[in-house]
Amino acid sequence: MLQLGKPLSSLTHEDLLVYERFLADPQPAARWVLAGSKKLARSHPDWRPFAGPLSPASVRHAMVILNALFAWLTEAGYLAGNPLALARRRRAPAGRASRAI
Image (cartoon, rainbow, N blue to C red; front, side, top):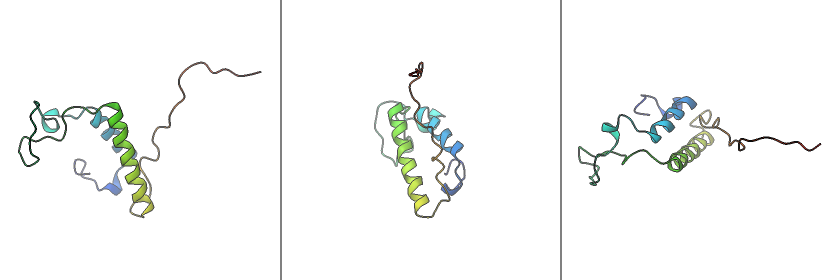
């Protein structure tokens, strides 16, 4: 990716975890977040891609889309493997486990 100076084929799982955190808090904000509520054309020098941090649901959605992209690129033979395949598995709610005896 442009920011890391890496092609898609060189991205690691850790790179994508950093990107996930970035989506939740795009920093430096002056570079990524539009100040104020006015809409600007993409060609305007003050245009920024974010209006603020993404919600947790939007971050999850973005990562689902990236996972699908990397899965397709793997299937197409462009990538050796999907760097998001190691994504966290959904955990069961924390609590006491009970066993039937």
